[in-house]
Length: 372
Image (cartoon, rainbow, N blue to C red; front, top):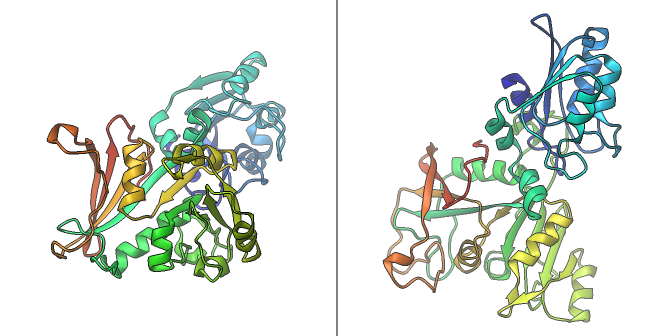
């Protein structure tokens, strides 16, 4: 199973919106076939492993990181393939949370006489797909909030200047975070201040598991812009990949102008005059967005944390001081007493070049996110 999990990791940057899955076929103590899911619309991990094994799959044990699917989608059911190949035992790490599967695949195999076992390395298997699992179980994507700050907790100078707080290695690490995300979310304030690209600028050769000749998938860029102030000349609108501008006002002419500039637009429900973050996340889940990387200023980041919508915080901490005039990490106006603090658990600390990367989990969040 450990080998199957390693194989599944190879799809980190390509399988979206499908889960990352690996499969290993073992017969008489020897691996006879293995595979992983590469991208949506292509064969699942079990099909690749069965193809590699051929006749040697008969009587073999299949170790698979996620319950085999039992419904017809863009590819045929994997349960059918396992039965046709004569696999005698299936060990899966976790049950598929997709409502069309959710134990049905295992029951079908069991009814056909295949020995079925579940739970082996379950935690490691769940760590492969935090976004897919959250979308299936909670109806929203998994949200990571990425921040970069000086040692005294400043994310920018008072005038908004922030390039560059961290070093080249940390910025490269952020590129890998973007490449593994389904969408990058920011606010109109950040867009107007920085005119960011919010794209992946690494080649396939620089992303583990990818074929060097592959095209790198660009995550959906999402801008919260209640009053449709995004300029048609914004840099991200001219770059490869899709952009979604999310507002609340009914302003047909402004919305049409953004569409003409190359953006998709979505009018979302409002809360206190701003985009309702919870409603937006449900809409993104409907669009099959698994993992959202929040790259925003202290107002939006603070609102998302305060609403309990952030599953993981990744803080890059640079070894320098920016002084009292700089901007802080989060804007949390409701906190006035020490007893109102929002508790966080440190999940991981590591050096990235000259900076530290600290991964924190809000109270109650499970430590199931993979650490690149």
